[in-house]
Length: 558
Image 1 (spheres, rainbow, N blue to C red):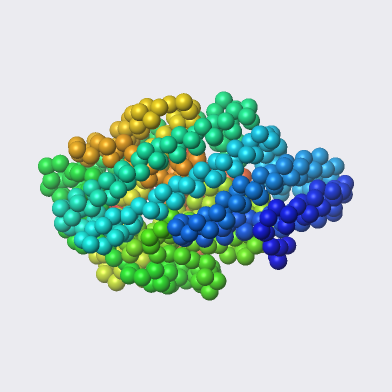
Image 2: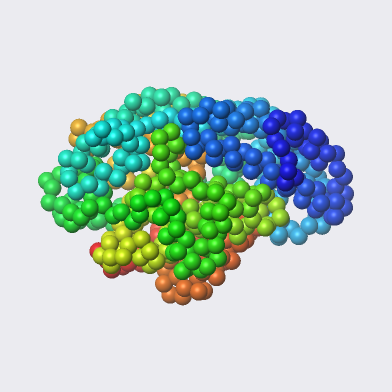
């Protein structure tokens, strides 16, 4: 399977037909068939991965977009019926009961869910969903502003929001948002179309709404929408008071009569923005040094990826926004994509995606794709834990103790603001798909209601109300990976617990971290968290406990 060339469906068809005809009456034949199927899936996944990676690196090249779209529209729809056939073969095999039921628990229940969800009429709709969703990156990738004669991507321009000159911040904030406003209608139209497609997918599968369908499709066996609502409530009661204290301190220290949206990132002492690195190469090399100091194996993961050219880190015109770690099941070592411009935020993104990369490498030798197809609650635990664990090693970027302390402070402040944002985005999605026939005006009204609900009431948006109206559109997850966001909240709690353990016993925590990640998805989410030495818990009491710890750490660097 390693040398398979995938240009058209005809390249794959004989392989699928051969698997469909195999006899699975014995344990040996079943395991052999599962091995062959997994190798084929690895080859297909990697082919699709490279099409996506190349497309997002340069959204201006139509041939790259067409190559990805061709796979999604012409190849994937033909694979889907075979997937359903294979799921049936597995579940119907008389040898299934001979397998270790605990070892294959997640695998089997995932297959059963896919069987229950499969509808012939959804194959074309799912293809449409993927094709429409990838338009988001193309639209956003074209966004740029001209500032002082230089054309800047939105990511490059964002660094000026930390400028000590308030007029500079104001000007760039307005330029960025005016540019975004040009695409507001297009994004709204795209999102409305995606909601319609996804709602039909859910209805076809017999669900009241797409949210309920998606929870099952994502394999959320260990929690329900109600747990999400409990998380929203806990964040509102525990986090908002802390976030309000942080923002009040900002307003008082800056001494402004009113705190404006372009005042939220500037340093309180009037210092220039942190500049941990200049070039993408410097970012990578210093991150490797940090990982080496934490545990040499971690540094080796990135070092190997560097040799394989599995990184594209710098921001440039035409590049899709955001950052990701894309697992490559066949190569074994993933690809990291991001839009670095030299900021502290980029450092965080690099160690975050580096955590994902370590996870990918630790699971690369697991035998089945199902073992390596990680639930996001586990995947994000790997990355967000690395953000916090790496903090004491950021002196590779900052030689000044003052700058190091400042970087830590900024990151902890971000956590106090990101958890409310996660709750906002997640609650917004629940509303969107529970009310799929809403108007754009109703969507805007509900969005603003949620911003108030999870806000601190400390920022003066007067004159910029229209910018608030479309601020949800910068969240690519809403377009590309619906309902993939609450995981950041759950994993952030887990990461804080990991960091707390790390400060008590470094080696034990790293051993548990590595052991948990090496499990892939061969255990349930709570079992994996337990292996990591933490709890999969998002109750108000647990969140309060973790925030008490985090606030003490924050006070140490204020």
